[in-house]
Length: 178
Image (cartoon, rainbow, N blue to C red; front, side, top):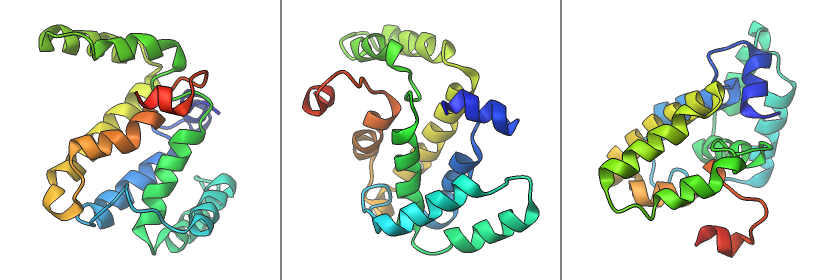
């Protein structure tokens, strides 16, 4: 499902439950962990947590209680799950149709014009995409504020998250990185 479809299905505030939980837990337990979002967890651990979220009922208190047991442990597994989830959604947070417009913002010299163009792009996002982007940017800003612990500054976080937030599936990976 797209972010918007999942948000509509969950009838929440626009941020899918899995995204909320990953961000909350990483903020709680990982905001001062070196390499958070850079160091990988075991793939099997990430997959186990992902499978649990795929089958859980977010309205069932027993499932919510079980979830806390499943997610307790390696915080890198939750940071990896968030990245994996954002990478697997059918269309990125900034939809592919906005890819060229978004990429072209980098060529604008004036910071004021650049900011206005970014605001325009964000204002046109589906409601849930905008909510997720805002929540994620605030979270990543807090992670970057703890750079002395995490060794993750805004540039390193951008390197990790950019390919999941805006992507063009018709480009070769190296071309997209450029």
